[in-house]
Every structure is written in structure tokens, then in C-alpha cells.
Length: 314
Ligand SMILES: [Zn+2]
Image 1 (tube, rainbow, N blue to C red):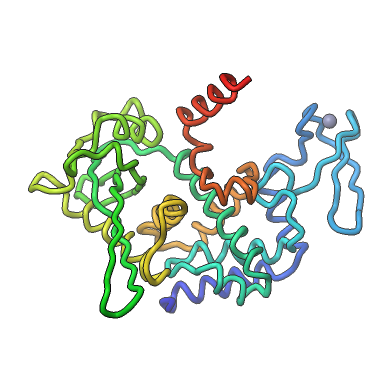
Image 2: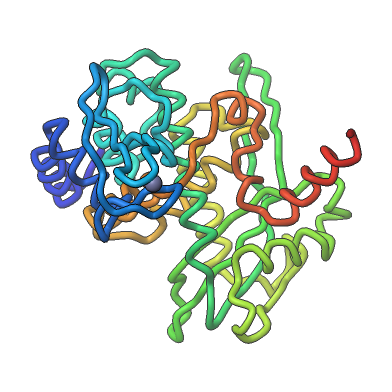
């Protein structure tokens, strides 16, 4: 259920982006804010070639051809841009939509909807890394608890430790939130080890900001109530979208989505930011998504270790 203001904003955006041309123009502006620029030589003047499916831009200087969607999360997709933009509008809303609902709303197959949703979450993850936290920052863990009920009488629970990091205002309100899942071997007796905490700081916190306040255990009076409430709110949001909750492989993607929309009132601004990040975030393939490695792409340490593995394998 959407609040009336969110619904009005949703309708306004749908009207604004109801044609392929309007979406094309918007993505062009986001991708090339200062006009076309060749990705190879930086040439500023293209020939525009109309193919059967999409427009191609051919650089007049080096003849390199690129499409509007190359180098974006939409690269290689045959889905109309109008549907992509509509999916982004829906993702900028507070309610959250499952791939099944998106498939019904956009009239695409479930598989297409699933890939679109995850690619959009991938762009959200990129924006969370780009906008680093600064000022008053606190870090503390909590548990994501998934409830699966195979029968009414039998109840199994699956839990995962997650680390929350938040930027606070002087009045103690959370301005920005990031939540990451923690590997089980990095938690001993409900205390998170220093390695994932340091990795979290490196990834999300401004190095020139004052030392963040760290509470490594998920219990005790030192924990900040607002941050705890925000992490539990994320859990409720995910579990209400998927009855039973979400498994380990894609948990991070949904945590990224809830952090992206956290505390936002202006859904139009949130949508424009999402459109912008969708146009500047390189594609992630379906294979990478199903292997659940999407988020690691933005993690310099993980990238290095993957590179090292490849290097060692040679
Ligand atoms: Zn060129």
C-alpha cells in the first residue's frame, strides 16, 4: 500500500516517462550530461545510426559504435527502456515489489523481471558505495532472522549476523544507513571480529571523518536504539516482501535496496538518482547475479583477491 503522496509521485513519474523517446532522452542526459562522448577517444560528435532495435552512436573520429545502454546496467537487454524506467520508478518507492509483481505490472516474463530487479539493486549498491558516510558514525551488529514455516506446527529459523553502519545527525537521527551481512566464521559468541568491521569502514566511511563508534556485539546497553530499530525495520521490510524471508545468496541485494530507500520522503529525487546510477553502473551478467557475487564488485579487497586467485590459477 502506498501513501497518497507516494502514489501521486508515482503517477507523475509514470506520465513523464510513458514513451520510449522520453526514457531515451533521460538516459542520454544521465549517461552523457555534457553531451555525447566517445568511450574510446573522447570524440564529441557522433553519427546516429538507426538499427532495427536501437539507435547506435558512431564516433566521427574513430568510428567506434556504441549504444545508449552500453556501459549501463541495461546493456545487452532487449526489454524496452520504458519498462526499465518503470521498474526503476517502482524500486524508488518505499513499499518494495517482488519480481513476481514487477513481472505482472510490466508484462514481462518472471525471468526478465527477476534480472531487471537484481540489476537495479546492483545500481543501488553502487550508489551506496559512492556516497560515503561522514561525521558522527556508529557501527553495530544485529541479526537477520528468516522464518520458514513448512507446516503450521513446525517452525525453523535461519539467522545471519548483519552489521549496520549509520551516519547520525547531531540530534541522533539516522541520516544514512548501510547494512552488510557478515560471514558466519567472522562471528564468535555473537561478537563480530575486527576484519569485517574494518572492511565495512574502508568501504563506506569517509577516512577523514572522526573514528566511528563501534559496538561489536549484538547485545548489551551500549548499542544505539535507533540503529537497532533501523536494522530490525530492514528485516521486517524484507520478510514482509517475501513470506519466509530471503536466503543467504541474495540477502545483500535486498539489504542494499532498503538502505537505498531508507528514510527518503522525496521519491522523485530518489528515482532520478537511481536512473543516474543505472546509467553509469556497468552491467552485471545474469550468471554473476545467480552466483551472488554482485556486491563484491564494488569491494576493492574482494576484487583484489579474485584477481589474485585468477593470477595464481595461471
Ligand atoms: Zn571515438
